Length: 93
Image 1 (cartoon, rainbow, N blue to C red):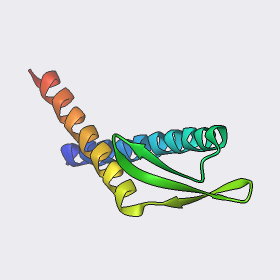
Image 2: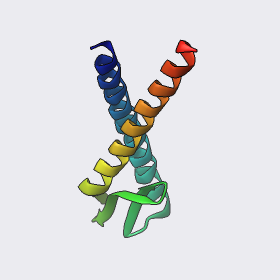
Image 3: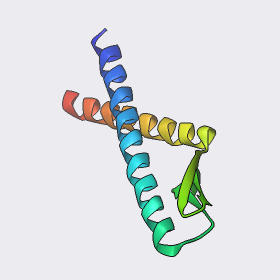
């Protein structure tokens, strides 16, 4: 039972990290869009498009790329569980 709890906690931590990572990248996407004044800008993480900014008048409107955001979350969650397993194995040796 303890192992299942560790895995769930690792998944939650991975999800939180993914949300923070995407928020920061989207923030910098907005700042880049306003600085460069482009009509459209696609925000990417490791080449994965997660957010699209489209200029509407003088402001930008954001549109999510849900499937790709889910992919980034999945990757972060898998990495978090992998790290937890590696730490657990090192502690037991």
